[in-house]
Image 1: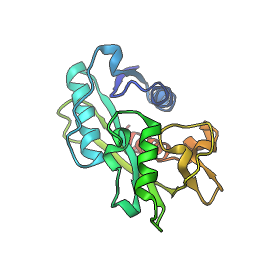
Image 2: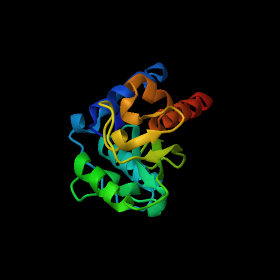
Image 3: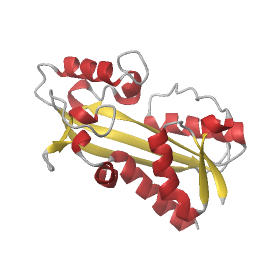
Length: 196
């Protein structure tokens, strides 16, 4: 099996990527297991930040790397919080504070439409001239009342009108079939199959 560094230490992402990439003979290793620090994310787009993370992990390890950058974009807020979704309220990963700030920003807005974005990038080396790049969207609405105990981030407030529930009310396996990250992984796998 070929080793692949995941430019993340998120256990849920690691498990998901390990399962989906196993048929392609990749052993997925989180960057923390190789003592690789988190990359800077100075860019204004999901794709550029994901590419920076993948190149950083590959340069530090000498191995192929996979990175994603994702977040939620509220239509009435011109795409905010966008690339700053995880640290929208100022502290990285504080879901409660981030959700409260989003709800406050949307107060009084008629348009509650939003979408999640996932940019997924895979590089064979730090200087790979042809990285695999996928970007997908998952559409819904931001609601004022949290529902559901699954998921993380903005999921309890991300309502899916076609299903009549929030993302946090979906079983993980069901969410993975339709989410932005699930869509991106399937597209990446399709690209890997055409390269094989």
